[in-house]
Each structure stands twice: as C-alpha cells, then as structure tokens.
Length: 160
Image (cartoon, rainbow, N blue to C red; front, side, top):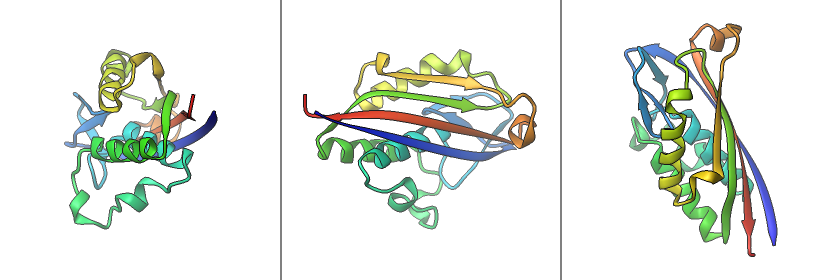
C-alpha cells in the first residue's frame, strides 16, 4: 500500500457586497471573496492538496485565472476534477483535515454543512473530513476582517 500526503493553502481578500462561499456553502455575511472564481478558499486549498499529493500540479495550472472561462466559476468544479485525477491514478482519500482562518463570521454554525457538502462531492464518509474555524486574534489583515485563509492536509492511499 502506498501513502501520499498533500498540503494546500489559499488566501483571499474580503470586500463588501461580494458572496462568501466556503466548502460550497453560501454563508450570509456583508463581505465576500475577491477572486477570479467564487473564491472558495476551502475548495481551493483542498484541490491543491489533492493535486500536490500525487505530484500532478496545482489549481493555477489546471484552472488559470487568466482564462475567462473560470471567471465566477463554482469551485466545486475544480475539486471534482482534481479528485477525478486522483482516482484515475488509483488513489483514495483516507482523510482530510484543515482549518479556515476568518475573524468573522464564526464558522462553527456552518462546519457540519461544509463537511457534509464536501463529503457528498467527493463521495466519501463525513467521518473522513474535519475542519476547524480559527480567528487571527485581530492581528494583521485577516484579524482586521480584510482577508481569510485556509490550509488543508489530505492523506491518500493506493491499494489496500
């Protein structure tokens, strides 16, 4: 059995009047991501973690922000394609662990829905996914509510 680990990271600025989407879940808030796609930092980081674990590349190579085709795109498209490639290479997900750093809003109320949505997209059990919501203790741009970031680790296995 072969084991692979991937790490993904994403960060976006927040701006009033934009949509806040995390894990494919629209979260009511006065600010949202400034991004070429929907800016879903969790799905972007998870996509990079999956691709990195198999040494395939990254989200920017597969879905460049210079391509108008991806403008405003639903980031689940990126995640589904990355996971298709992972499965094509013979790997399956053992588990996903990540944290999302936002000063506001608190993610505790949305965590279960984000996990369930991600599990549905990847067709895996919810017990294989966990995310934590953290603040930046009012430090820097994230702490001032001007940005949010996410880091994700994924463990893959090939064979039994």
